[in-house]
Length: 306
Image 1 (cartoon, one colour):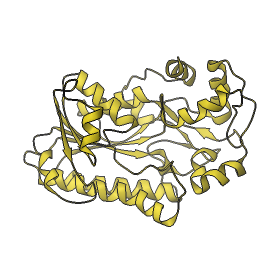
Image 2 (image 1 turned 60 degrees about the horizontal axis):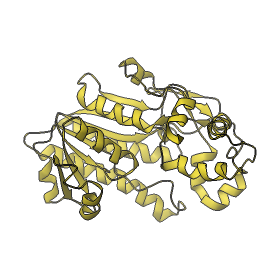
Image 3 (image 1 turned 90 degrees about the vertical axis):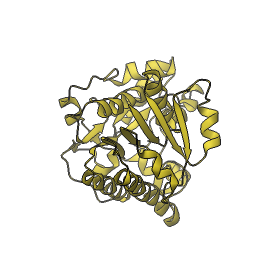
Image 4 (image 1 turned 45 degrees about the horizontal axis):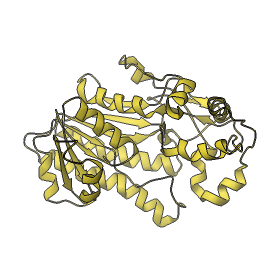
């Protein structure tokens, strides 16, 4: 296949490009910073890769590059974990996803021939937060800010169905890999000062980065996969269990909880990402017989830190 990818230079995107390239697919990287893209994906190592500069929220000549691609993966969006959620930042987070997806769908609708599949990222923030409820792909949306972001994101992607292009929406959990959220947790553990964030009772619905990348490739290459799938491992854990397991893997104690007020002082509204969680089950993902390499958290953490 020839696959166009937005967000290709990010934590998940770089691994997806590596895997697609290794499997012999052609890759088209759409990036706001082509120079950075060429540093990450040098031509000597990625001869089947093309880099096109674009402004995600604006129409432009970049849209013509979508013609001839059989698949599109949309991972682009402003980080929700960095900085305080000021009104301006909230608008940027929504616009980067909703408007960015609208322009990508516009390109797909204009393309001739049209891509056969769009794999569009979303997040389990769609469901809202709860310490007691269990959510799967059929659960209704929540009503907080992150749920609003996901609804706007998915609504923009839904318009691709008029192409007709098969749409797969991957509602992603916390992605575990060397980097991302886990990297921020490792330092205090290595200094013997690790422990659960907040109460420790909040749910942590996670997925190993390799499993998420495999799921996206699975969605690209299996025509029967359609609609919403949860990009989470089948065994979510509570924060306390995650931190205890991380301490065990690192041979460090998990004894120093980080209180709610400290995280709220440091992160503002975005502290919700770690202080509140949701128990998410990948019911539809499993029904497609997708094979997880890391269905439980301890082997996933062992693989990452060792």
